[in-house]
Length: 394
Ligand code: PHB
Image (cartoon, rainbow, N blue to C red; front, side):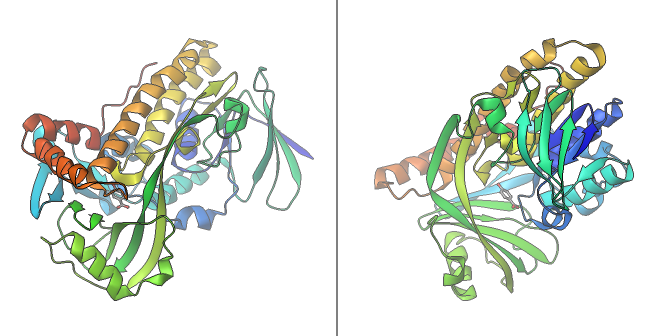
């Protein structure tokens, strides 16, 4: 059994865990980052693609390895389609901000390279089996490394940045399920295809056949989604059926078709854990909350948590001041619930629920019209989509 001592043990090498280890190192605080997945799995898993301006700014500061400004694309708006009409929401004129299309796995490639270059103790294929002593000043983790050998990490603080199936969550929240939870009666059928972009900006469409999102990756690869039943078998549709389904939902835009090389079904859930922190342990990112993908808030919300927890840990570990840590949960929850509301609102306004009546569908169109025809409505959407300013003081 090997034992490592560090100041902060971070479980999860996703955007939250890696960014936190970077920010802590800048403040002179060492950490160990553990992940049960291989480096390849982490760097190749396809996730969402939209970064808020604030997220881009902080990633760009991480160092020369960030390619967000060279490989990413700035988007100054989105299109909302409904009732055979197209409406553009212009972000800079409404909020002074934009968003960036830069897929999460690219962010992870950058962050992993930066952490390894800095000599970070970053361990892949490493599982955490138990979390102990969070009520003491010296909590610890027990796990199994990539060679199957048991190990212990003794730390001053433990962070659960290990996603929606977090192993740290029970130690903080009392159980894996102790939270506020909502499931949706639909999912997204996602594709990656080889084709040029069909539109300059992302299209979110409410159609009589259900929701579709026309997103992008780069000049030659596109990402698109259409609302489907959560039990849909991705192999059951031919490429032509997928294209016809997508096209029927964006009647105003001719989709440029091409070979589809990946298909997946994304389930829709909203979740917020009841306890974000207990003693010397805290949760960030998907370990603490899940949002449906419609508002593109997942990774951005993780970054917002990390910015706060970084402040709290610096106060605790550099100045022995616990007060910011005592404010972490309450402060983080305010933004989490705003993002939960926004993600739920975008979802409910754009999707066709199996229980929807004709009244509900007509009401949705009234709701969409009240957003796009009012500067206040467009501004509300643009502020949330581009991201509320990060709170950097606790
Ligand atoms: C994506 O490109 O994967 C994407 C974009 C916007 C969303 C969700 C996913 O709201």
